[in-house]
Structures are given as C-alpha cells and as structure tokens.
Image (cartoon, rainbow, N blue to C red; front, top):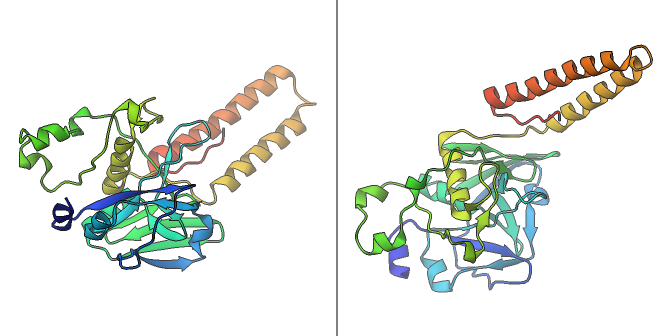
Length: 270
C-alpha cells in the first residue's frame, strides 16, 4: 500500500482530536505557508491533539490534510474549515491540500486582517473564506453517479477512463460508521460527499462568501429598522405600521437575495 501511495499523488486524511496526541515526525515535508497581513492562526479552529496514519503511509504520501468537519450549532454543515491548527501545527483541510497537490503549488497564501482571515490562495485558486478560514459551501444537487464502489474497482468492473484524470475521494457511506452529515440540501449526506461538494465549489469558482463588512451592514439595517419603528409608532396606526414594516422587510430580503444570486455574497438581514 505504501508503494502504491508513493507512486501516486495521494493526500492522506488526518483528524484534529481533543485527547489524542501524535508523534510529530520532523522528517515529513510540511506544506509551506505564506502570510499576508495579520497572524492568521489566532482566528483558526484549534485542536489540542492530532490523529495521524501509521508512519510508513505518512512518509509515502504527497500531502496530508485534516478532514475534520464542524457542524453549526443546529447540527447543519454549512461551512468547512480550510485551514486549522492541530497539536500546534497549522494544516490545510484534506480538500484544500488535494487542490494544492493537484495544482503543483508548494505554498499556501493566507490573507488576513484585524477582522479575521480573508482568503486562501494556491496556484490557480484564490478562495474567499469567513473570518475563521471556513468555506461556505454552495451545495449542488446530489448526483449518485459520482459514486464508484470500491468493490467494483478492486474486481476490475470499473473502466480506467471513469477515474482517470479526476480527483478521487475514498470514503464511506455507511450510517454505522458515524460519518453522515446534515446539510441544507439533505438531512443525510456522507461526509465524503461534503468534501466532494467543497472541491466542486472551488474548481468551478462557484463559492459563496460572507464579507467582513457584512455584520456591520446587518447591524446598521437592524438599527435603522428599530429607529423607524420608534419614530413612527406614535404617529401611525398598527395597520400602517405593519404595511410599512412589511415593505421595508421585503426590500431587505430582496437586497439579500440580490447579493446572493448575483455576487454569491451572504448578507443576512433577517
């Protein structure tokens, strides 16, 4: 297995962990990082431990990335961290490392300001992120045809043309292995498909982003709405207030939809 990995451009997945600490092999090549602006590590998700593969496989791989996915507070996966810190090591996600290796880039450029991380760049790609270095996934419709059974591959029932020249993710879809995620488009999506959605968003350039000034705009709109209610409530009846409030809310919702549909910007006035 190590020989097969060494003869290909394979990126191994690792996991940030709270209670597991790995023996960091200083001989392993480390993905180069270049920082522009503020120190980005202060904004990244950090794990005290790191779960790695056996050393013989780690040494044979072309890259290593974290496949850790952090759902939102409601359990839905809307964003995926693209850069994280595990056991003191700054590491890319599995998908971002795959893009780096596939593109032949030696260094990841991280842009950050005082408000947080702005974007991540490699050769051929500049991906906007939120302030924590997370990518907002623009989910596509599920396509079962992208799945290829590992058994069929091992038994020679899959044409080499089916996988030649493609980025391949090896994962599981069994519920019992506890890697099923809830997403905005389906209540049950295998974690490996979430990573595939990230790759598709990055490769097609169809990436959703939340600008750093978005929160300020949302706060300003809410403040204006509150001031208008305070100013006009004593002068108008409840029906007029409901109508005016509905019109104002419609304008805000329409503005949010415009920024999302035309510019893939997330500005949520609701």
